[in-house]
Image 1 (spheres, helix red, strand yellow):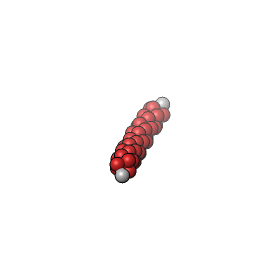
Image 2: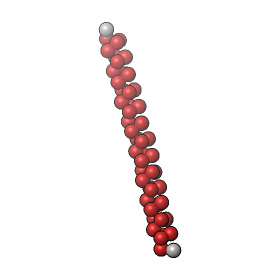
Image 3: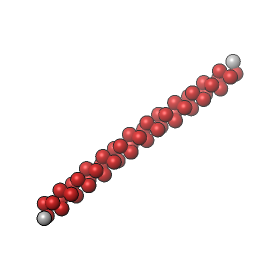
Amino acid sequence: HHEDIAKGKEIKGQNIQAALWQIKKEWIVKINEKKISYAEKQIVKTNVND
């Protein structure tokens, strides 16, 4: 019975890690998209100036 409780805690911990990793990945994607769109705007500006 005690082992089951320990297993439960382990699984819960893994789920939290997985959830945090998922959030982190989504943030990275969002930040990268912002960087890309900003870079694209800069490129458009330089093209217009030429």
